[in-house]
Length: 332
Image (cartoon, rainbow, N blue to C red; front, side):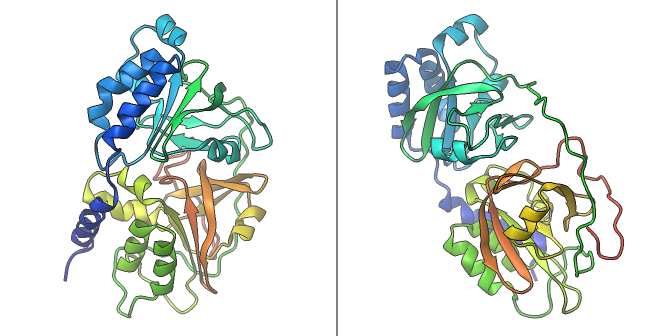
């Protein structure tokens, strides 16, 4: 029988064709439009690095382009700063406006993410307190380019008060974990089908591999599923993928309405030992360690809930992946 890691390796290799690189025509057209719109410096930059973007790991892209005078004041920016202005997601203006204050946007600089600093009720969108200028300069569905007033500051920190995490969410199911296969058939068949119908093939396949051992008839689960492109953007050692999957699974069933009731900073355990998720919210939008939940209730049953999220959930700021939070009598 194939080991979990080898099965995951085969799974990911089978998913590679689903993620095609950015079309070269999109990059060429974007550089042309940028130049004609007064963003000559970013046009030249995008043209120079276009070959590095031609990869299945970058199927879509959003570029935040500072004006030419910002380039003139800053000089030639280092690659790490330029990467901070590229997000591996095609984000429309409507999507950015819908994100709650504090939502994180991943970038191609692995050490830094961007933060939304306006609310959905605000017409003007700001990221890291830098205004987005008008509508997208370019948008073909795969590649989106916005003009911004100045360079983002990688050291930006919000001055908003940090909420104190609250423990106390009750779960019927006991905590459990591990990478053992179930001895019975695949109990996730319906959920996997619903996930695939919404385009979440990668996490559906992981769920179908049954990387967890269920204990008893009262087992309940919540699964948060990033998009396929988000999963591919986090490619690394195949041995890392079980931990990436397990950090997105909570050992109790939480519908979107349940989560909205606990959006004040509550911490919940996951199947990855020591990894916790902080649930926060703004209005009717929820965030998990700062990652927005974009597709609530993809699937629900009496023991399982599945929700779509914008990106892979990383360790929350101020905590470590290995941190422990006390747990008693089924509390998470």
